[in-house]
Image (tube, rainbow, N blue to C red; front, side, top):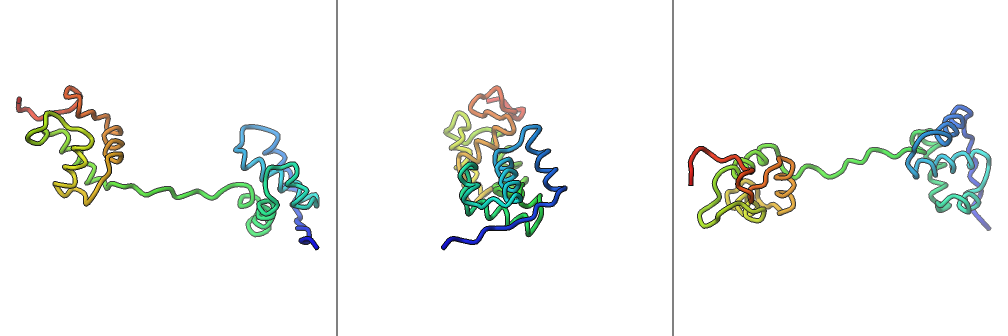
Length: 159
C-alpha cells in the first residue's frame, strides 16, 4: 500500500508566473526544477511519477508541494537567503594588523611573511589566535605584499 497522492491546487496566477519563469531568461537549475515540479503537482501528477522525468526524489517533490501550500510560490520555488559565516576579524583588529605590517618587521627578520604576521598578531595580543589564511586574505584585500618591500608603506626612517 503506497502513500496517498499529494493534491495541490496551484492558482492560475501562480501557474502563469511559473510558465513565464520557465519560458524566458536564465534561472538557477534548482528554481527551474522546482517550478516544473510545482506545475506537474498542480496537474495532479504523483510525486514518484514526476521523479521519473525530473531529477528530484519523491520526498523532495513532496516538500516543494508542502512549501507551496504553507508559504506560496516564493517559498516553494526560491530559497531563503543563507546567512554565511560571520566576519573573523573586527575592524579595529584589521587596522592594528595592517598598521603592524606597515611598520618594520621584528628584530631578526628582513621582511614580513604571512606566517610571521600571524605569529606577531597573537604575540602582541591583537587576537587570541589567527590562521595564516585569514591574514593572507586580509593582506590581499588591502593589496599589501609585505614580502615585497617596495609595495609596503614604511615610516620615514631608513634602515
